[in-house]
Amino acid sequence: MCKFNKPMIPADATADERRSLMFNALHSADLSEETEKKANLTYISWSQAWKVFKIFYPSATYKIFTNPNTGLPVFESEMGLMVHTSVQADGIEYEDWLPVMDYNNRAMKSVPYTIQVYDKQSKQYIEKRIEAATTFDCNSAIQRSMVRAIARHGLGLYIYNGFEHICDDSEQPTNNVTTQQKGNVNQPVQRQQNNTRSQVKPVQPTVKDEAATIKAEIIAAKDVTSLVSLYLDYTEAIESNPELKNLLTNRKKACLLYTSDAADE
Image (cartoon, rainbow, N blue to C red; front, side):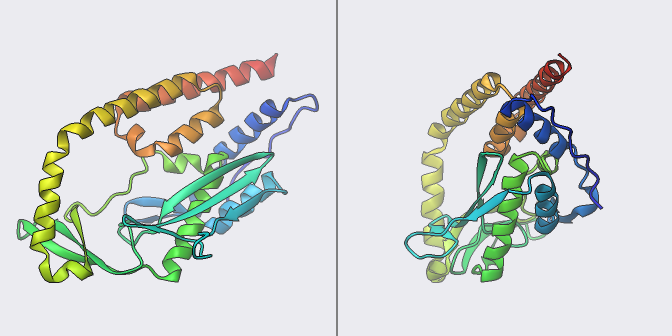
């Protein structure tokens, strides 16, 4: 059973002070008994997350966005399928985008496609088929996205510490090939590899620029809520950069200390 304490809100608390107290209480809620492991990642039941969140915010609402072109709750591009949700509470609405993924956390599309993965036993690249997404896959992604949106409000946020979309070590994908290209796999793959080599040098400055941007936003953040939003927006970049991760942690401690001191006054 989830362990949590709903905070006492002073009658004269400002909106930001109230939201800070609620965020800290949500972030401190122990959800360890409500989680499960899947493909090296930790998940929390969407129903449990929503139940606890509604105890804190009885008037909380959520949205599942639909594609205006299809009327379906899924958005498609060449990269794959995405879902879009949001959760609103106390005048604050947080949105979340999440890819529709298979059991190995690989992006799914509306049609099957293949990827080249490295097989450790044969020490060569082999072709692996990614099945087309089903309505069940899309619905699961929607519920996970909603839990992530809830986490932006504080509940279960700690679960995402160290969060990464990890494929099995023996199956790191290289280039995507659709089933329509399956009969001529080698030629598209070679063309994609050549393009990758020609684009390696321009990518590095972009990574540095992104790190600098994230660093500036962390330093400029005035409260924990802003830091949470930054973390969820740039999870992969922060987790792969020790400097950014330490800066975020220290900035969070400073914000919490400031909030605590202000409350004591």
